[in-house]
Image (cartoon, rainbow, N blue to C red):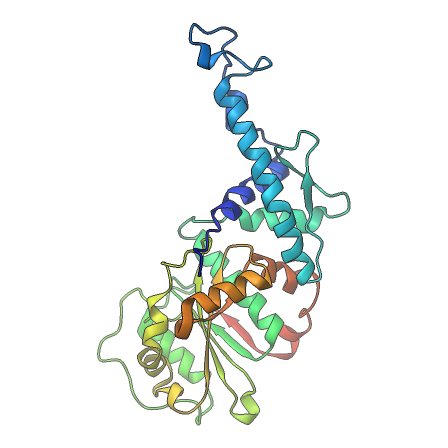
Length: 291
């Protein structure tokens, strides 16, 4: 299978932030030389060679990204809220799509930022996932709003479980500030002993090599949190949240590329889908706890 390169997605999403902030590309703030003794650096139409080349790159980036983003949003029942600017080298907001555009750019501006921004994305994506699929949900990843360490967090977590959902095993040692490998859990079909969603979040674009190693340790992680190895009793569904833009076809390609390690994925468009199209009623019916 051909390599999956989504670097253009992360590059293009910077243009969303620029569009909302009314900013200008960095190269437009440089002083273009009006003359040059080097023939290769003679200005083109009054602009430096580097400036002209960077502008051409952005035009190509917009042309590549727009149809991809429009398809991803269409598949979730949304309209991609940005369009090509008159110059063709940047994005501008589609009239009437200001609210979605603001939220989309807000998520784009989070990419690769550490705490506390990464935690905010983790919680936003988790809440969106629970809205979309229902179930009883609890976000357990560190750091936590109440400052609870792993021991206290696990004790609170188990108190929220029914007696038939938990065992009596405890970790030999508790991580001081960690989460023992879990960002969140969603129990589906709690009344009929349904499956469990094991949730991990990465505030980054897709990277095939950056697969969370926690998915390989699910039995041990489940035992730490639930007191027993749930994978021996019920189906466990691994779900990874990425701050990216993925079409359904791209999700299929990524799942296939991972083979037996394929996982379900929630991306930035799914977060917007939960907020603007459906799922708003489910959190009122189902319990969703965020530390």
